[in-house]
Amino acid sequence: MQLAINTVGEELRSSAEYCKKEGIGIEITDLAFPWNLDGDPKYFIEKHIKSIEGITPLVCHGPYFELNVVSFDKAIINVCRKRHRKALDIAKRMGVGTYVTHTNFNPLIRQPSYRAKFADRFLDFWLSFADEAAKSNIVIVFENHWESHPEIQAEIIRKANHPSIKASFDNGHALIFSSLSAADWIEKLGADLHHCHLHDNDGELDQHYTIGAGKEDWKNLVKALQHYAPNAVLVAESDHLEENKASIDKLRSLLSSVDP
Image (cartoon, rainbow, N blue to C red; front, side, top):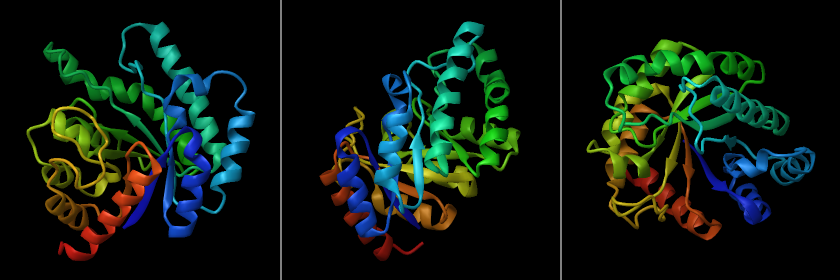
């Protein structure tokens, strides 16, 4: 399985050096933050290309804060398009292969039509982006956040039927917001699961603990990944390099000791 770590801000260079040494991938998280999408991206691109050269796989986390691609307000949709268009352009120029963003499905909206029409309206926004991403061999993956079950992602992918639209699973989010186990999510998403964020927490807050430091059932999670999604990119997603190093060590141990 392909392993990677996330990095953001000042740890870019040290994280990249670690990834080169260990032969693993890297996920650039800076573009998730809107202030990094303002202004001329030239310096941002040059700095990142210089650091990540030779690393594979390359992943980029796109913007998601307050973005609502199923809004009825055209002005909000235009902001979403502007943010993702710029982020995807930067990702292309950096040679990224996977672009991560959130579904931002809101389970507090109980109007039946919201859930019934979510996938169709979501794809009205994303299909044109997927067509463009495919030209640069980029796969766009949609990450669970507040969802209680994986059927929303599964429906999006099934209806899209597009080679550049796949799923991302964040086990920490599921540990907080879902009663289903991580293994259940992975089984449901199956071969459409292209990317994972792996970290731990206490089941209450999104703390991004090192793997094994919280409540997650890691043996069953890894077993499910090996069986149902053996080609997924597994990204250790803690907040600092030293925590990610510990997670990679733990993940490698689990992968070598757990039978699928």
